[in-house]
Image 1: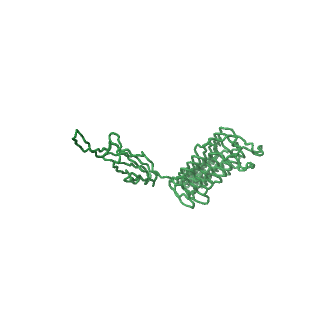
Image 2: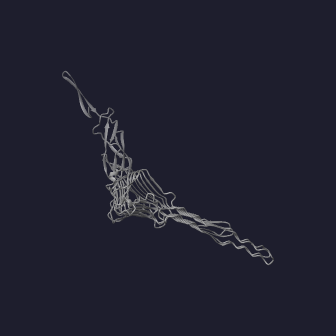
Image 3: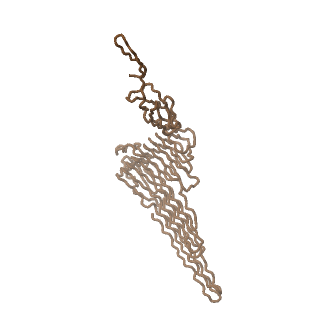
Length: 516
């Protein structure tokens, strides 16, 4: 019935006899609970071992020994108390007699909040509970950063780095009213990017977000689209809300290297992509891509070798993609002069020049890069409370000029002598590069309607500007490259009446201008 000692007595009439009986269970199974637990670093978890015999009866008071497969991950005491040491997994085993039972323990790092109150440096991969960078505090990223937050991220101060990659991922919401920038002051040819993502609402207010490379600002599916009636009450639209925010990529992409006989191509400019899964609202915000790099110059002194300038890089593409409804409004609905969303289209880089000399010299200027292509995709209705949207607004929204081709020091034929005839002068061919186009085709894709809000005064003065594409006169195709040729002189005749030689032939073709 239970473990222990008992005396069994047999009695017949006045006589009796006794025998000693020892009852001792033998362990057949050991079950460890809880099964597959998760323990935080520095936290404890009490484990329990249930020992049973072959009949399934529990063995109360059975002696149990404890062990861990990796005490650097999870340690265990003689009483089964597990302590998390480092991230990873370890097997915890309970032994009773010759029988064992085990379970796998996972040790995790419980994120702590990142809430700096003074300036500091960070880098690497960080997992935190939430991020709060207050105004006046500067966080400097000293190496590539992946900042993962299991909760909200709020940046009112400054997050900055020099030629590093910055990825900020917020699980619940991302709110920015400060500055985020990853500069590249050293002029690196491979530029790091900037990625800001969240699984919840995305809000930027009076923020500056800048990058030396490609930029992505995005959220995942969140919330439901508000009705048209709600829109007219000037709500704060979830999940994407952008107020007085600048998104831009610094300067120009890297130029192509000068070379002989061919210059390198300029790098394409980095672009900006803003994706909103759900509804979005823009108020007086701008999106600015990076200008393409210039092509490198090419030169040649060799006979018959063509010098070629590198092509200019294309301007960075700018993208705004909204799966739900889009609201465009001015900060003050009475002021209808300011655009709600501007695409500052980046210029294409200039084509590299080409310089050649020598016999039969040839020079071909590089083509100018095309300006960046703006793209707007809206899955629902566009409601505008102001001037709305404008593309190609920037003064630099143009194709790059084609490179010039110059042959200025041609081969001159030698004069005739008594023993040699006069030489023909060197030919020369110069072709200027083609100017870049303005952005190809500007793309606007709308599934729903465009609604002009009736609450704005003087609605007859409102220009939706949805068709105002490339309207700025300064947004134009690049100028074609110039072609400049000097041909070689033929040699003079000799006193022995040997005839003089012809001068070289020259062909000069200017480059075509780019399309607007």
